[in-house]
Image (tube, rainbow, N blue to C red; front, side):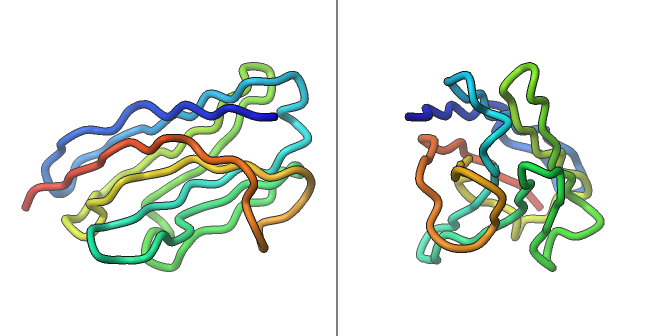
Length: 120
């Protein structure tokens, strides 16, 4: 069982930056692939970025070059550095985890979400 707790959301002006963090419970964090998803009002939850157990990273096209996902296995955390934020980045951001090396398929564990609002 993995419990995920996000932090770092907030209100920022367009062009600004935010850093989201996700703290995971458990002693086998390094064995989980991790991801950030986001869901805007009236829209589906979409993958923003993922990082595998082997440190391979993928990004949604809409955030490439602006967002960076990273993990610290010693601290059981995964971070999302968000730069050059746009109003369309406004959403609830969720941390997710799944056992093993993968960024496809079902994600087993979810955090409660953190709101990111980008004003124009």
